[in-house]
Length: 544
Image 1 (spheres, rainbow, N blue to C red):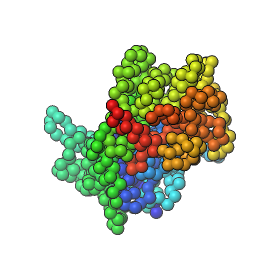
Image 2: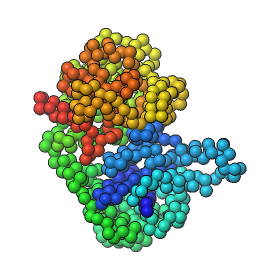
Image 3: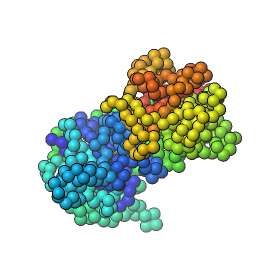
Image 4: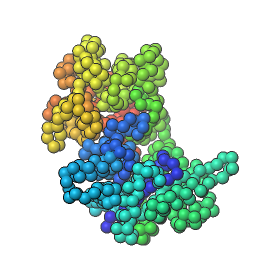
C-alpha cells in the first residue's frame, strides 16, 4: 500500500517545505523504503519555463523534458530518484487540460466547476504512477489561506477521506518567530496558521516549526495543546550550517520516527545514515579551498543558479575542499574592460553558465577570452559553451561571429534550432513560435571522441546521456574552421549534426557543454565534470 504525506506551509513563504520534503524522503529511504516526491504549484503558468529567474529561480529539467520547480532539484539531490512530468503540477496545467477536455465535449454537457472537476484532476495527479512506492510526498506550494491554493487544499481534504485511515499524513510547516525586543519565541503565528488550515477541513498530524532559536519543551507542549497534536509531533526545524545537515538534524529531532508512528508502522528498520554522515564529514572538514568565478546574467539571485551552486559544492566534496563561489555580473566587463583582470585574476576557475538573451553576452565572451589566454580552468555550460565557440571564432578571424539569438549577424556561429531527433522521432519548431515548452528539453544522448579529455572524465565511455534546455545550437558549418584553430568538438549528437561538447587540448582544462550537467549532480555522487573542474581549480590554486 502506498502511503501519502501532504506537506503544507503557513505564516510566510520560504520556510523550507521543499528541503523538509527532500530530507524526510531521504530518511525514509535510509530505512529501506521506496519514496517519491511531488510538488503542486498553485500559479497559473503551465510550467515555470517562461518565468523570469528573478521571480522563480532556476527551472529544473527532468529526463523526460519537464520544466519544473527548483524544489525538484532538492528532491533528486537528496534521494537520487529521477523526477518526471507528473511530479510537478501547476494550476495552469490542470486548467489547460480541463479546458481542452471541455472543448472536446468530454464532460457531456455538464457544467465544469472547481469541485469536482478541478479537484478530481488534482487527485488524479497525486495518485498517478504509484509504481509500488511505499511513500509519496506531496508538497503544496504557497501558504495556507492563499486564494490560488484552495483547490489543492480541497483535493487534499477529499483524499484524506477517500483513502484508508492510516494511508495519509498531514505535515504543516510554520514559523515560530523570535521577538528580540521581548526576548521571546512567539507561538501565535503557528496557532493561527493551524486554525486557518483546520477551517479548510484539514487537521495536521504533525507540525514542523521553523525557528532561529531552540524551542523549549514548554513551548512545544504549548503548541501541541493549542494545535491539537501530540507534543512529540511538534518538530523543531532550526537553521542548519548546511542544507546537507538537515536530514541528520531532523532525524535527531525524531521526524522520521514520528512519521512512522503516525502511520502505525512499528517494525521499521533503523536508518542507515552512512551516506549522510560521509557527506557532512566531507563538507564540514575541508582540507583546502578554491575560488570559482561564475560570470553570469542572473547573479543577483543565487536561486537562479541553484543546481549549479550545489554541483560546485559537490565537486568540492570530491576533493575535500571548500568551494568559494564569486558571483560576477557579466555586464560589468562590458562597461570597463580593465575590470576583467581585477575580477578574474584571483579566480582558480571560471565558469560561464546558461542563460537567455543578449544582455551580458559580450562580458561572458570576454571572460572566456581571459580564461583561454591566461590558461585558467574554464567550464562553459549551455550558453557558456556557445560563448566559447563565438570567442574562438573571433580569435580565428571571424570578427563578426555572433548568435542569431542576439540579432542578425554575418557570421551565425550560433543559430536557432528548428528540428532535431528525439526519442519520439523528428522534432520540429517554428523559429517564431511559442516560447514555452518549445526548446530541446530533457535527456539526449551524445557520442564522445574516444581519445578526448571528456571521454576520460566520463570513465572512458563514448556514449553519455545528459539533460538539455536550449533553443539555439552551435552552427556545424563552422566546426572545421574552429578545430583548425584548436577548439575540438569532442562530443556530438548520435546523428553527428548537433555539437554537444568542445574542449581545448592545448589548455589545462577548457571544456564547454551544450547540456546542463549540474542537474544530475548529487552530494553523494558528484557529477564527473564538476569533480574534475574543481580538481583542475585545485591544481591552479597550487600554481598561484
